[in-house]
Amino acid sequence: MSTQDGSIRTRSRLRAALPPDAALVGGLLLVALQTVVRTGVVFGSYYWHDDFLHLEMARRIGLSSDFLVRDYAGHLEVGQYVVYWLFSRSPGMSFAPAALSLVIMQLVASLLLLAVLRELFGRSPWVLLPFAGYLFTPLGLPVATWWAAGLQAMPLQIAMLLTVLGIVRAVRRRSWRWAVVSVLAQAVGLVFWEKAVLVLPAALAVLLLVEWGQQPVRERLRLLARHWRVLVPHVVVLAAYGAVYLTVVNSSSVLGQEAQDVGRNTGQTVFRMLLPGIFGGPWSETGAVSTVYPYVGDALAVFFAVLVAAIVAASVWLRGTRALQAWLLVAGYVAVDLLLLQIGRADFIGLLARDPRYITDALPILAIGFCAAFSGRRVARRTPAWLTRATASADSPTAAVAVLVASCLLTTFLVDGVLQHDYARNYVRGVVQALEDNPDASVLSTPVPATVSVSTDHEGLLRAVGEDREFDQPGTDLRMLDEAAQLRRITVIEPSLRTAGPVPDCGWVVTQRWQSVGTVRQASPGAQVIRLGYLTGQEATLHLSIDGEEQAVALPVGVGYAYFVITGREGRVSLRISDVELGGLCVTDALAGMPWPAD
Image 1 (spheres, rainbow, N blue to C red):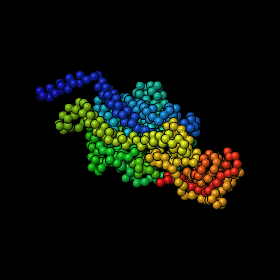
Image 2: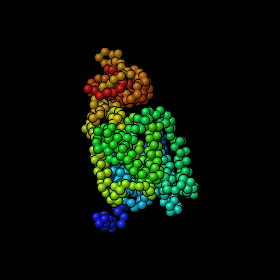
Image 3: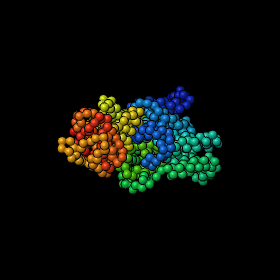
Image 4: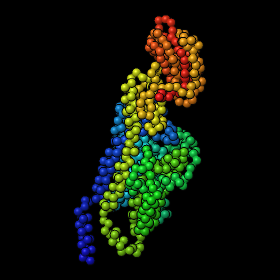
C-alpha cells in the first residue's frame, strides 16, 4: 500500500507541476513541429500538372468569367482560380509563393482541429494522440506538395472544421455570430471545391453522434429541430450552390463511368493505404510513384488491420454505444469518400486506389472519431486488475505521441523526394536554358512530357511560370524539345503532302506571283509542319499560304530548308517571294507531315 500511495503522490506532484493547460501547450508545440517539417518538405516541391494549365490561363485571359467559372473535369473551383490569378502576378519560376500558401493553409487547418477537439472533448491531454496522427500522417503529403491538390483539400478541411466549430458553439452558446461563421465557412469551402457539399452532412453527423451522442435518439432529433435557425441557412447555401454547379458543369462524362472491381480497389484504399497511413506506415518508399502511396505488404496490412480492430474493441469495451457511434461517424465519412472515388474516377480507379488525395478530407473526421470513441462515461464492467493498473498509470500520452510522430516522420522523410516533382522543376529550367542558348532557333510548341503535365504545351508551360517565348514561328532552323529538355532538329514523318517541282535542277521557280505547289489534306491530330527545300542566289522573303492563311520567313543566300508550322490547316499550298530586286528562287520539294526529332 505504501508503494501505491507513493506512486499516487508522485503523479499528483507531476500534475501540479504541469502548466494549467498542458493539452493546449502540447497541441501548439505539435503544430509548431508540423509547420517546421512541412516547410522543409513543401518548399522543396514544384508546380505540377494542373498548376501549369491554371497559371497559364490566369496569365493569358486574366480574372474573367471564362477563367473563373468553368467546368474542369467535373470540378467547379472558382476560389482556387482566384488564388492562381493572384499568384500569377508574381514574376519568376520560384515555387516559394505557392509553398508558403500551402504551409499557411495547413497551419490554419491544424489550429482549427485543435480548437474543435478542445471544444468537443475538453482539456484532456489524450486528444493529442489522434491530433498528432492528423498532423504528421504521410497521407497528408500529396496535397501538401502539389498546389492544385492542396487548393482543393486544404480549404475543404478549413471549411469543414470551421463549420463544425461554428455550429457546435452556436448550439452550446446560442450564439448567432458563430452560426454566421459556420455558414460563411461552408460557403467558402464550396467556392473552392464542390466536394464541400460534404461539410454540412459531416457537421450534422458530429452533432448527432458526438455532441449529443449520449442523448436518446428522440432527444437528439428534438434538439436538431429546436436549432433549425442554425441549420436552415446551410441548407439554403447548399441548394443555391447545387443549382449553380449543375448549370456550369456537365458531370455526365465523369459520372457515366462504370465502376470497376469495387471490392479489390476498396481493399487497396482501406487496408494498404488508409489504415497503415494513420499510424505512419509503411516505413518504406517502395512502390511510391508521384502521388501513389508506398506499397504495403500483406503482413503489414494484416498488422494494421488487427491494430485498428483492437483499438475499436477496446473503445467499445470501455465506452459502449458511445464508441460505436464514433466509429459510425468515421466509417460513414470514409465510405462516402470511397463511393465518390468509385463513381467519379472510375476510369482511373486502378491507379488512384492508393492515392491519398481522395481521402485526405477524412483525416479531421478520423481525429474527431478517435477522440469520441474514448470519451464520455465508462461502461460499468468488471475490469481485470491488470487493466485497471495499466490505465491508472497512463497519466500522460507523451510516450504514445512520441512513438506515433516518429513513425509518421520516418515514412515522411522516405517518400518526400517522390512527392517534390523534381523532374518538373528540372524540365522547366532546362527548357528555359535551352531557349536562351539557342536564341535564333524556331521552336515547336509540342506537348510537354506527361510526367510534367498532360494539359499544356511548351508555350503554355513557359507562360505559366512567367517566361513567355514565341513558338511555332517559321524559320530555316526548326527544332523541338525532347523529354530531356534538349532542342533537337526535326524530320518529317507520316506525310500528308510529298511532292517535287517539275523544273529539272530547280523544282518550282517561285517569283513575286503566287505559285501553287500542291494540296495538304486533313492531317492526324498533333503538330504538323511543311518543309520546303530551296535554292537562292539572293536574300529573299518566302511567303506560304494555305487556304488564304499566310506566313513568311526570311531566307539567306544558299541551299537549305524553310519550315512552316501548319497545325490544323488544310488546303492548297501557294508560294511567292518578296524583298527581291528581280527574278526568283527555286523551291525544290515540299514535304508536309508530323515533326519528329531527327537522329
